[in-house]
Amino acid sequence: MRSATRNALARIVDLCLAEAVDALLIAGDLYDGTQTSMNTALFLAGELRRLDEAGIRTFIIRGNHDAQSQVTRELTLPASAHVFSGRSKPALAKTLENGRPVHIHGMSFADPHAAESLLPYFQSPVAGAINIGMLHTSLAGSAGHDPYAPCSVADLERHGFDYWALGHIHQRQVHGRKPCIVMPGMPQGRDINEAGVKGVTLVTIDEDGDLFLVERPIGTAVFERLRVDLTGVADWRGMLDEVGRQLLLLRNGVPADNLILRVGLSGTTSLAWRLRRDADLLEAEIAHLAAALGGCWVEKIEILCSEGRDDEGRLGADPMGELAALVEGDVLPAFGFRSELKCVAEELLQQLPAELRSLLAADEERFEELVRDAAFAGSADVLSHLHGRSAGAGEGID
Image (cartoon, rainbow, N blue to C red; front, side, top):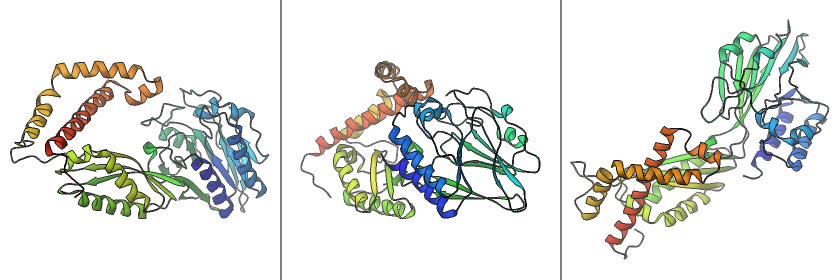
């Protein structure tokens, strides 16, 4: 993953060269805010130089992360790379064969925080031209993204441009066709929260000014979540066979060189306790299955399955079943237990960096959910180990 983002940029440039495009548009956040490596900056300059040598221009606006980066201000780019300032002055990108010009409007922001819309600062469309706007914005808001230069799709539509190239939100979104408003997302995911195939948008403008979009995958590594239902699976070998089958199906459907998975095992199975008890063996077995497919890795395994219940909904009549029912029905919901657990969780949370606290417990509801999930997961883990001891130590792999 260390080289994946650089590889993605190189692939974008390769695509530009192969398609002989007129321009590459980058709508902000070339860097993370803490980026200080000049090696990264030099790599960027080298890739843009490849475009420069082919006569392909690059248009860039600075996003909120770029505004935090010292590298952004120090880097010297090729002459064909146009970095918009904090004033929206249109740049002529091309003149079509029928004489109609294509103008690009963009605005960078020098501060990492932009609580107000930048749209009022954009100039009006150039009369008789095709007008393309570049804006780094959170639109009306998006989960996992702080507000940045907020505006609505309707606001963008009213401005009169033919196409909006947006940045900031990592998930691809397309809003309408006239005008065409595209948030292409990021070209390379960096963790499981940025799952799915990532890419860029190839835009073609014909002589009549009509726009045509094609999404092109770029990322060299794809993160995905795989949920495997183990309902009815009663032995270890059957579990591995089902996981292997699902892994193969997913790997065959992902075009990227590398696939990084978070595997969730769900459903009702008598294996539930053993999967938790032998989690280390489970991880090794599934990692081996993934590696055999080539370019496939398991980032994490989540054991979400449960043991079966009898016709009356009870966990079982044996001592372990009775203990599990007691924990689930009486201990975990008890006010005293939940209050004490919350106190412990709050103490642990305060020892984490502020950004992690915000991620794990953004609000009271999320914190309650975190505590509840931790209680259930912890009790299930303890019960699975007790179950294993009561079953005896003489088991092998089925």
